Length: 312
Image 1: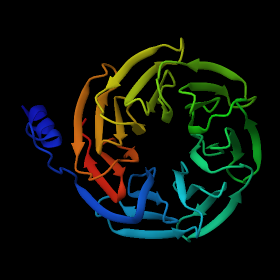
Image 2: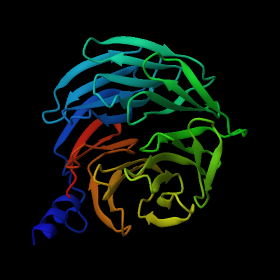
Image 3: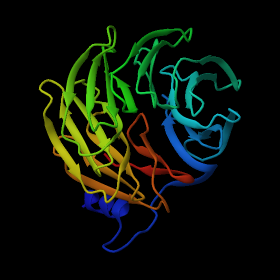
C-alpha cells in the first residue's frame, strides 16, 4: 500500500500534471545546462548559458555561492570526489577548475578546438575526461590541469557525453554518429562499439559495478548495455521527445532520465520497468542528477532547478 501511495505521489492521478517537486528554484536567467550534487549531498551545483555556476543548499534551495565565468557560457559540470572543487565546461572551448568555497578558479584547461559538451572526474579524483564539439575527448591531470591524452575517433561527429568506468581504466563516450563507444583510458584505443540507437547520443553513465552502461538519445529512448558483450539489456521507451540526460543511483538500482518532453522518468535498472514520471517543468529538461543517498533527484530546465523525491 505504501508503495502505491508513493507511486501516486510521484506520478499523480490519471490525467493529472501536478507538480510534485520538493523544491523549485528560479536559478538562472537562461537554460540550466547541467546539475550535480556534491559528494556529501548537501549542495547542488547548476550551470547555465548565463555564464554562471551556482551552488544551492540541497534541502532549502538557498543560494550558497555564485561562480562567474563572464562570456563563457556553462555547458557541463562535475564535483570533485572530495567535494572541494567544481569543474565547468564552456562554450569558449575551455574548462575551468574552481575552489568553490573561495570562488577562485584554480586553473583553466585549454586544448579543445570547439565548445565543451561534457566533463567527468575519475572516481579517485586524479583525472578528468572532457568531450567536445571538436570531435575529440581529452584526459587531464585534475591536480595540475596538464593534458594527459587526446582520444580522436577519427570522424566528424561531436562527442556529446563522456564518463569514466568505476575503476578508471576505461572511458565511455556518446556521439553524433548514434554510437556509444568504450575506450582504453591509458592508450586511447577503441575497445567496443555499442550500436542500436537511432539518433544522436546525448548522455552516458557507467554503472557502479562497471558491468553495464546507460545511454540517452535523441531517439527518445534510454538503453542499458552489457559491457561484456556489447548487447542491449533493456531499451527504456516512454519519453515523447529527445532524452537529454541520464543518471544512475549510487546503489545501482535506478536510472533517471530527463527529456525535451518536460518530464523526468525513473526506471528499474534490472527490469527496465518505468517506476515513476516526474511532471512539473514547463519546458524541456536538460539535466538530471541523483543525490548520493539516492533519495532525491535534481533537474534543470529553462531557468529552473527542481528537486524531487526519488523513492527507493
